[in-house]
Length: 280
Image 1 (cartoon, rainbow, N blue to C red):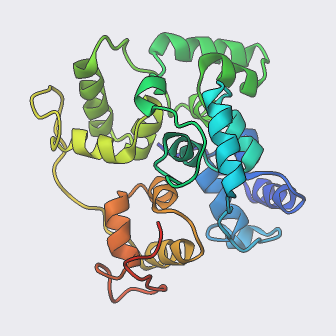
Image 2 (image 1 turned 180 degrees about the horizontal axis):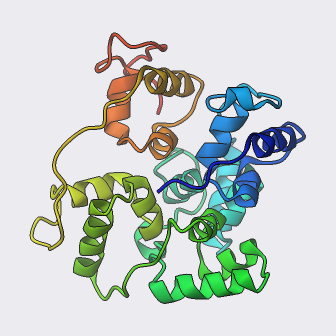
Image 3 (image 1 turned 90 degrees about the horizontal axis):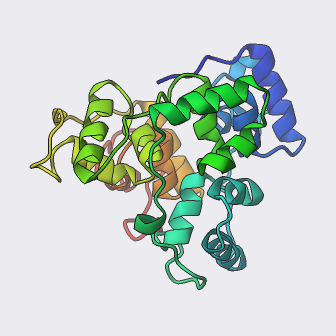
């Protein structure tokens, strides 16, 4: 579900703050939008005519020492939203690093995503969050107390996250995912609510996994990418952005994105083609 569009004045203000050194995750929380939206605005991929300084997009490089520090912080119980803000990377990248899905050859304690996976907010919890926000409590403090990211709180503010019924088992979780998807909630948003990967959500909502569980099964179809999207994906990947981050940004499975960046699909579309063995 889309957030309320920012005015041109807000876009200019956001770009000026970013140019002055503010982090994307901080700006996302301040303006109640996703980090992906902030990234598109500050790099000029969207709303170019709104004005304000445009900063060419470049992927944040994480050093081996930072990878170890991130893993140690997550293992010690530091909220992932705090780690994300500290290192200037996405919440999804923090999860990938902590679990070993990214930088598998670097040391540091790995954290089992199955053991630490956050449950989706319930309807009652969403009501509690709204009440605390209405009382003027800080968003970051609320996020930490509920064990969610600050952009989940922003999602509650704009009405995109409304909460789910209390789940008592895996079957309930699968059914809830399928119902949310059939109601128009994106796979990326569902993955964020349930603390899992978009790939797992995709398999569940299409019935490729958990076939014996209930809930509406989505028809098999693939979203067509436009020329600007294909170019943006290829340029970002060539600049070092991981397929996982691009998957979150464009709501497309990493396996499909690999076909896009290597030219095995959309071969006639613009953008630099990467070698099949290019590190993802």
